[in-house]
Image (cartoon, rainbow, N blue to C red):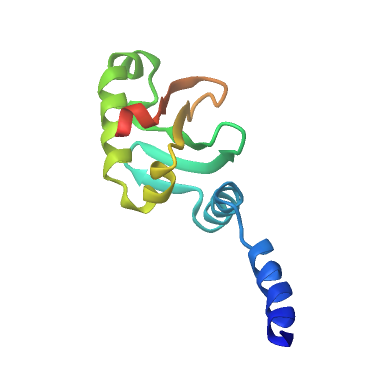
Length: 131
């Protein structure tokens, strides 16, 4: 009986220390941004930061497009191809499996390097897109 009285509060304490998936996501994007951003993804794309919105379960990649990609008309012409590429990227990203299993969203906002106020492209990849 004494063992039960000792272990019961210990189990409650350990259970209450568990981090929710939302809290984990919020923590991970802050840590990743702090360690790895800005990060050059390719010749035309820089990952500036990651954010997470707990209320909508949405990860957002904040990107900057440079060089030839820093062009409003070109971004508009490539709109459907960009979305297809993003969906394929989310589908194949095994590091996000736990979040995908829970139906989280993945948003991408690409701004112009020459004028940060200009959004060249944005898209949201939802559960319906990647499953």
